[in-house]
Image (cartoon, rainbow, N blue to C red):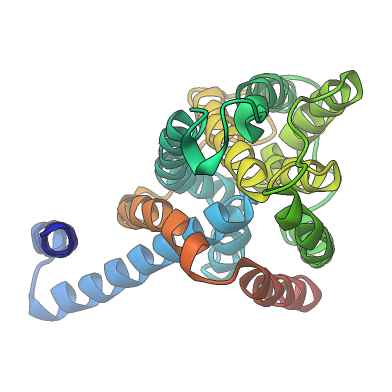
Length: 313
């Protein structure tokens, strides 16, 4: 009975999304040929949103890693590329963050995950980590857009450097994740230390500066640090996704109506309004994929892909 209900929900989501694409394109088209071309574009944009959100929620890095190279190939300006990436991530990262928050509410109970009443819960650090890091990340976003700050290079150059560093860090994560996967059931870190809180402040602020330039950055820095410190894989991903969601929303709000900054909020709404719903779908299904696809193999493939994009750029 439950499986039938899941099938019905998936069918309803497919019908709703298909109807949305058809009606929105029909309203804008002037003929059948134009309708088909717009429908093809909207399907591709929706798939882009799904792919970006899945990667973002599997790695904690943010969907901009997928979006920015595509936007550069579409000849969008730097302001359009970053703004559109923020707009889409406001959909996908929020869906992923809500999914992980619901998981946290269930997992924090002593009986969840097979934990005994006297065993420390690995989710104790969830709220402290996201609170400190997200507040500092928002501060970094605000200072980057309203202060005397200019990016050290062009968007393609900066993104190429970041992609190489991100791909390399994902490969290192594969080694760290082996240790962390054992910690998940044995002796994973539970409570952050004073040194950790200082690190969260630095990661949040400087990660916010990076995110302001590239629309990605703070999430990957955070998940990388948490894995190094021995926190569980699920906790690390959940914290990175929630912090990234709060960061991209703060960036979108900060840029809206801002005229004196080095960048303006110029999202391509035709693209964002199709990729956004796809990002919601990707954000919702990513957690299921974590449970079904071997995460180490998936991250290895993603790391090689990102390294290739960085070297090619």
